[in-house]
Length: 404
Image 1 (cartoon, rainbow, N blue to C red):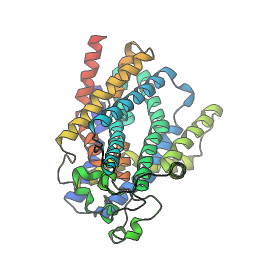
Image 2: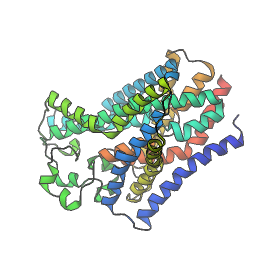
Image 3: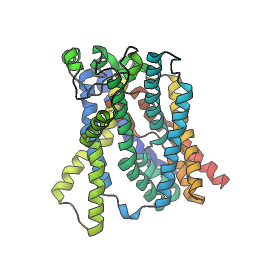
Image 4: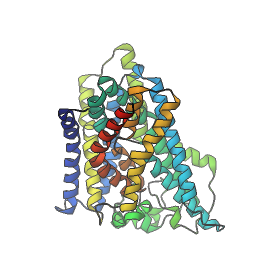
């Protein structure tokens, strides 16, 4: 079993997250330091600076030549299985509006939205802050190394794919609406929209000053900064052109700092570990001074978001429970199938299942907030998932030990 000292290590690693969260919450709810527009701008800062630097710094220090191919393949299979299961569940649980074409298109927009959110909940976990100390305490150094490898693949492959889903949905939504966005949607989460709870998906991606956001001219800008909900546009014009959409999405992903931070980080790691190179101290220091803000500022931004909601559980009890089921049940079950398919046995199999039950990735909230898609659901999943994760993970560890 895990010693009390090891449990203390995990708790001490998690406690600073809630310190940053509390500061963000108090800054808006009690001290009124930030306006809604400023809260949105802080999240944009996190999404475009703090997270990319954190990703690059982490990937640049991970050895790409020491990867366990079987474990990574099993993890990839489990994520694909989880995505298929979520897509099937959304397909049959979200109505498409019968024979009405407008309602059918609105239903399609809702399905794509919930598919992205469901996959975020089932497949993306907190591998570094919680996973590294916990799995090291459970199984030792080899488990710590494996969870770092899974974190590398998650940052390099799966998060860019998630961003691709966000961008495709945005292109589909805006294209289906003929490029017209309502002023209320254009105001985005940076304005009063952040208090709408379950209507979170109608929010804007980046924050614009309210005076500009209310202008139809600003709302129709072609840079794709503003997102709206297809389900709220029943009269939207149907159909988008495939290749222009693919080109637009590709260009936006190429300009997304989170994507090229992942690519550049792995490229540098391949070069550095192949020829034993090291960055100059001034470069390393510059990177680390920004990368260290990644986790803390993400939690701070989440606290700002929480403070703007009418309820602590912003998405409601039903969606909160769904998020916990996807994170702590569906994810591990998909991993069990994927790991068994690739022949993982013994402690490696137990490790794979437990790492799949780690709490929700903080980055998924940052991206959901930036793209205006169910940020209330993701914030609840991160906050309460991290709180309950320790007893859940220890229970997994004990049960798997008895079964094995």
